[in-house]
Length: 267
Image (cartoon, rainbow, N blue to C red):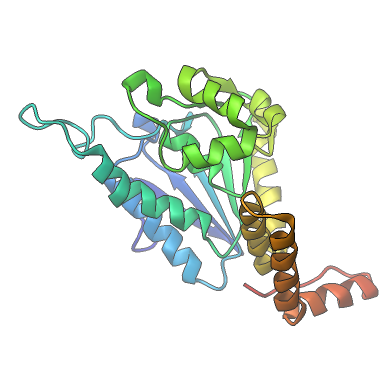
């Protein structure tokens, strides 16, 4: 563990892969101020560490993350006066959301149980989401009179379209992992007994791929949803111009010609 790793967040390093595990199993890994700060700090640290090439986010116990802890001091009313939840979003969830979406390496969510509310957003903000077949995703906000946050209103319609996004957000039904994969909400779900092994294989694979090109791909796909074809083509040309002069392109071509695995190093 490092300086950004209190007991609520477990940090483990295996080669180029950094694993961050929410460690509030007794509270279904629900988020409070300490945990969101620790997670943001760990992500900032990973972003500055050139040796990290993939970040995996998971949860201890039977949940991935149940969302905001409604018993946390930053939420509980004092003397009958409600807390400013907009301030909570601005101070805690907005920085975490923007950090995740701008990581200089690929991110992988390993969803081993319920992912609800802000916990669902935390998973879906990652580049690749793998879930146990027994896992469920829940947009739990309508049950407590709130709107989806932590980027969910931006993410959901882009991932599954307006009709499905509205149904998920308004009804708040449990969405099984298998159905989530069918809808395109996540990358895949796997049987529970092979989940850990599949996550490890995929994380190591992402860690070997050209991180700079993967991150640029993320940015172009996000940008492409809101721009014309001509602007997308211009952005692709600029990206290829930049990447074409980088080490990883030359290495990839050489490895292809020599029929050997490529050793990518750019970040």
